[in-house]
Structure formats: structure tokens, C-alpha cells
Image 1 (spheres, one colour):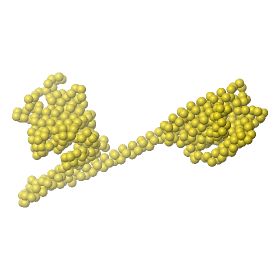
Image 2: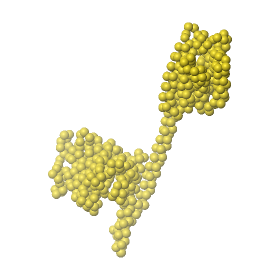
Image 3: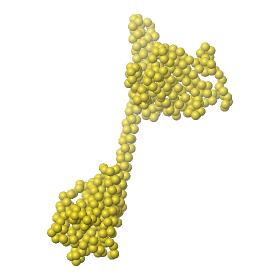
Image 4: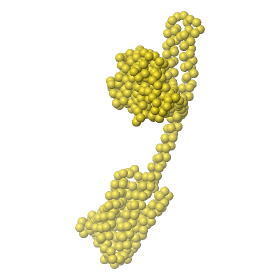
Length: 503
């Protein structure tokens, strides 16, 4: 075969060095993959060994012959142990390193004591052939069960290289004593041509096995994460169902406490006598009412989390709802010295919603605004229709505000701001999160804007499709201008739809 052996060596060295650099890059990205580090080491060592062969006559024999052959043998051993680790088996270095040590002694002897090139070729080729066959054995006994095609391909290539090495060793042993490393014999040419091509294919096959292993690990991890997510969802549903059941169980005795306290407070069965009893009864009633409010919040939150809270939608007069909620909270605002005012645009008055939950949204937002606004401050509730964004219900105050870091926290269940006066305000941190979920159940979103000492603005944005044309009104006709206050002229604003409630 008319091929220049030194040229094949040079090409092989260039290819192996390039493959080594690619393997290093891949290993750096996937260091946790078993065996990949040893495959990278093997590829790099083979590249260095081949560079040593090409530089013979330029560098000392100790580097190019003794060290070069040693690096090549250790590189092949690294491939073998890497395959063992990849197949979940322990590495075995002692026996193979001992064999490499024996061969290195023989190489050194046939380099310095007796300059016998054929002998060096025979011993190194024979050991490399044996290691190749060990690689074939490990591939067929382990990884081939997980990666049939790629593992079988790698085993075939290792076997092919091993056979050409054995053929080279046998051929050189039978050649005349003057045969050298670069002698253009058929056995040498076949081996180096085959090893050049096979080395590329072997590295590709090993990388494909590595990629398939990573894919299997990702799929297994995805299954584990999905199972963990299912368990977490089940635990969350169980927690929510428990809270819902607990809320139902607690409501009965709390209603009893409230009922009996009310009987005492109103002296339904006759005079109580000592006026202190009426004070005690009033305290019992107020405490029970507060506890019932907390339980209702927990219950509603649990029902939302469990996905069992359903909306009962109907046509709702938004102006009347706002008037009811602000009026209900007016005594509390009066005690705190806080002013409340509201207005509803005519185009936004009639909406499709769950009236009970809409009231709950407004009561939570206005109640929060009153609680966190100091004496002399004010709370404003407005509603209008923006064709671009939808129905906007805005509750704005000039209270203590919220730190930027706390804006996301207050929208999480049981999350409260820890700033100054806010710590002393009663509540369990479910009002805003529950309001947010109720707005989302209506297909909307809750927007929160605030700054310390500059007040807070909360906007509930509902789909524009929830605004209805009042019954009896033709499309495009303006609504009749009648107030939402039951007709009290003194309570009307200029547009006839807004009624300020001043504490």
C-alpha cells in the first residue's frame, strides 16, 4: 500500500488533538457524567502520544519514544476505565498500570540497551490491542443494554482497531529486523488508516452515548419532579380542604357565641341588671364578630386554593355596591378620622359579577385603606370604563404606603409589611391575596402601586365585557341620570352618580 506512514501519523495526531479539545469543552459542561472525564483524558493522551511519534528525531527519545508510548497506553487504559465507570462499575487501574509499567521497561530497554524498533512496536501494539478488546468486552456487557446502537458501534470500532493492532504486531514480528516505525508496510498502513478513521468514530460514538445518558437522566428527573409536583399539589389540596372543613366546623359555635352575646346585649329576655353585663356582652359580640371575619377569610382562601369556590354571577349595580361598602365602613372611618369619597362613571354602573364577591373585594380594599391611613387622611373609590384596558375599580389612599420590597410580599398569603405602624394593625395577611384571587376569578387582575408616606393605589381591572347595558336601554343610549343614593338630592354630585361619604 503506497501510503506515507509519517503523514498518517501527523494527520492522526492533528485529529486526536482536535478531538481532545472538543472532549475537554464537553466535559467542562457535563462534569457529573460518569466516565466522561476519563474519556476526555484518554483522547488528550492519545493526541499527545501521536505528537511525540511525529516529532521523533527532533525531540529526545525519552520524550518521543518512552514517554510517548506510555501516554498512549495510559490513554487506552483511561478509555477502558471510563467505559467501566459509565457502566456503573468501579475503575480498575492496578493491573493495567502494572502491565503498562512492564511494557515501558521493555520499550526503554529496546531503545537504550538494544535499538530494536520492531520489538517496541510488537510489545506496545500487543498491549494496546488487549486493552481495545477489554473495551469491547465492557461495552457489550454493560452500556449495550441501555444504548444498543451506539454502544454496539463503539464496540465494533474498538474491536476493529484492536484487530489491526494485533495484525500490525504479528506482521512486524515476522518482518526482517531492519523494519522501522515508518516502514511503509501493508500492516502499518492499514492500522494507521483504520485507527485514524476509527478514532473519530469512537469519540463520536462515546459522545452519543453520553448525550443519550444525559437525556435519560433529564427524563428521569422530569418524572421525579412531576411526581413531586403532584405530591405537593395533593398536599396543598388536602391542606385547603382541611382549612375549609375547619372553617365550617368553627362557624357554628362562633355563630352561637354571637347569638347569645346579642341576646344579652339587647336584653331580649328582660333586664340584665348590672350594666357591666352589657359591656361584657358587647365585648363578646365584637370579639366573636372579629373571629368570624378571620375564619371567613381563611375559609374563602382555602376554597379558592382548593378550586371549589364558584362565582354566582348576575347583573350588579356597581354604584349601589360601592355605596353599600363605603357606607358600611363609614363608622370605622369616622372613628379613625378618615374621609371616604366615591364615584362611579355612568358607563361602568351595570356589570356582570358575583355581587357577594364584588362586595368582598371592595370591603377588603377600602377596609385596608382606612386601616393604614392616619387621622386627617382620605380614601377615594372610583370606577370607570376604559375601552383599552377594561373596567377599572380604583381604591386610593394617602396613608403610610408600602415599601418597594414589600409590594410582592403583601400579595402572598399571610404576607404583611413589617414597616412602622403597619406592624400594629390587626390582620392575618389574607385580605389582599384573597382579593387578588377573587379579581382573577372574574377574569381580571389586581394592580398595586405604593410608596412610603405617599399612600397606596390598588386597581382591580376587570374585562370590558363584564360591563352591561342596563335593562330597557337601547345600544348606544346614555343611561338615565339617577343617583345611586336612593334619590337624596343633597347627596348628589354634579353628574348625579357620585355620592361622597364623609366621615
